[in-house]
Length: 96
Image (cartoon, rainbow, N blue to C red; front, side, top):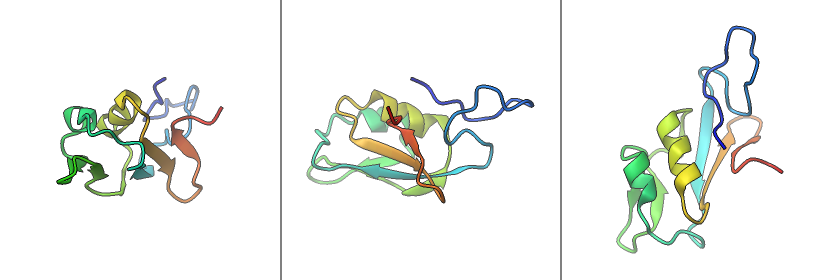
């Protein structure tokens, strides 16, 4: 599931974290991370692996961007959690 990053003029279809200029808090649950490095392939400037091959966000508080969202969506174990700064509303994984 993709979350749009920019609102249309009417705001239609905008989901959590979709507003232009939004800021996200990115966290990696290291108890889930298996070190697949998919996050590095999708967002090479957004993540790094430590010596134990555990992922870490380069900047946990970042501007909303497609690469970081793609990294979260493609993490094989959904270890990447993105929330909207300020409200804490879930961006990924989406609340069910």
